[in-house]
Image 1: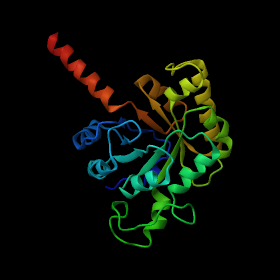
Image 2: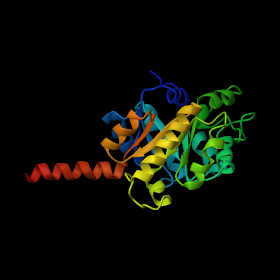
Image 3: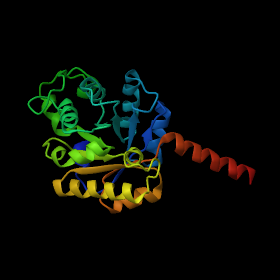
Image 4: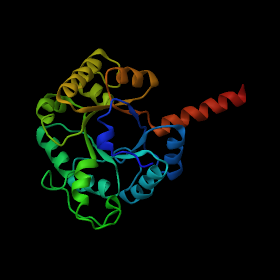
Length: 252
């Protein structure tokens, strides 16, 4: 059975678990799906992925029944458009620090009249169909989330949340900790208070909230607060943890 569009899925109360992936491997995407995650976040910002690798990874995710999201490198419109043309169910745009940057990113993910995404319906995202109807369908189905990771994004949040075609705000606790003067302390009271402030503002505006959670405890905490999309760890750390556990068992 096909997955419901990500944009609709994010509006449900059921949390969506998706690890970040910085290893460009089809087999790893399949393993994430077989492990029971709901999606995978292909990380162009910190991973070794090139745009040419996205297609096969996205197809692997779709074949295994999980959502392929892409964290693009920047709010550059061509970056966002390329990820969506490759078939991503949604994009996560990092380092949004102003209303202007937010508007640029959201508009880049939508076709006219909602935005200015470059129009081509012969791409993988459109099943190479050339259908004129696809543009409206993509505007309806594709999700765009903006990362709030610094003081600028937090300050601009009330205005950012007014954008009618924005689907969600994704919080980066590690970058926030640096911005708040407590680098690396993702559990610091300043960081927690800021995250809770953003979650409450998103709830009031009817906008989805996502967050990176490096531990299961953090994930459960934020799910209890109403977060819908959890960036549940990073593939490198998860693989390393599993390998260490296996070696520990072998050596007794």
